Structures are given as structure tokens and as C-alpha cells.
Image (cartoon, rainbow over all chains, first blue to last red; front, side):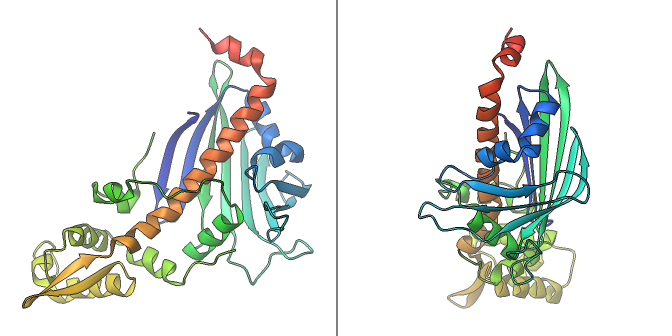
Length: 174
Length: 117
């Protein structure tokens, strides 16, 4: 398992994941910077993403949509790149767009996504993703857009609730 | 495309308080009324009553009459929904990271060998 840590904060509506890869930071950066590579992992095989533009630099923008199994297209998504420091750091706003790529005011507000990439020795790299959601409605809407295959409700969640303070911080998982 | 019922915001808001989270935890057993609950916290009965009302409006707890008593019970389904959203995001990212790993494996046989000891 390459995901080494998960932190969920139900109060602040944030989710942070750490993952480790057998690759250099430069190579991991390419997964974000090259739209053809990005398309191979952003959406699941049943909902592949198409990036119609991608400018991974401060002030740059990206726009994308996903195609469902029935050929139906999801609403357009946009990224607004706030910071891009290859190969270490990306800060972006991730939201729904109108057909012309401008933010869609009728959809739930945008979230923020911060990516940190750092070498950890032996040619390995740690990538940390921080998702900051504006509100729960947006979370649900973005999820609906990112249709994951096999999004089964985890069995045993009741146990997790009964365990101490899971509601508060949803402790780290390994 | 599904849009969340508006209650989600209220649920998250209701859980953004340590006392209320603690009340929800105790309400999972569902044996205490507001008087008993109030005994656990250094605050007035009225303050605890207010917290319970907020949780009730968010659909996270209900008051149930048992004989002459009223107990506060957690609505587990409501509580689970909040967690489920974050859990689903975790799954989404785990899948993405899995695909990233696969992509890197396509071009990294050399890097992998170096770390095999």
C-alpha cells in the first residue's frame, strides 16, 4: 500500500493523504504537469477525465470533464493554479466551471487542493495531498462528479463510530 | 448527479463542537436523559439542553420517551453520513494513488531495482 497516512477532520472539512512512490519528485511532478498522464489517473477507468487545457504555473488554469460509462459528460471542472513550484508544491482552487471555463456560480463553491512533493531518500518520494472543502454540499457534488468504481460503503463503520472520538478527528489510518 | 440534502451543512456544523461530539458518543448508548447528560459537563442544564437541541435539528440525535423518562439517542445513520463523505473521498484518493503507482511502475523498473535490497 503506497498510502502511508490519512487524516480526516470532520470539523474543518479537510482530508489529507500521504503517499510514497518509487520515483523521483521530478517524475511525480510529471503526473500532474502532463495532461496525458493526468488523464490516466484523475478519473477512474469507468469515468476517465479529459483535460482540455492545463497550465501548471502560478496564475494558470486547467479545465477538464469526465466521461461516464454511458458516454454522458460530467459538468466541466476547472483548476485555478495559485502556486506551482516544480517539482515540490502545487496550490490550487478546484471548482465547477461554465462552458467557457469561468467559475460556475450555480454549482457548489470551489475547494482548495494543495500538493506537496518531497524526496525521502533511496530514490523515493512522498506526496501529500490536502483537500479543503468549502461545505458538505460541495463535497457531495464533487464526489458525484468523481464517480469512483466500487464506492461501497465500508462495513464496520458503526464500529468505527463506537470507537473513541472517531467523529471528532477520524484518527489516522494506516 | 446527486446533490446532498441541505442537512449536511447542519450536521457538520453540529459536530464542530467538542461537547456536542461527546454528547453524540454518549447518546449511542441512548440511556441518558438531558439531566444525566448535564452531569458530565461543567455547564448549566440549559446549556446542555441547547447543545442537544442543535444536535436534534441536525438529525444526529433524537429524544425518545421510555416510560416516564426521555432519553437522548444517537441517530446512527445521520452520524454515519458525515463520516461516509470523508471516507468516500479517502477511497477516491486511494484509487487515484493506486493508478499513479501503476503509471510510475510502467517506466520505473530501474528505480525499483535500486531500492530492492
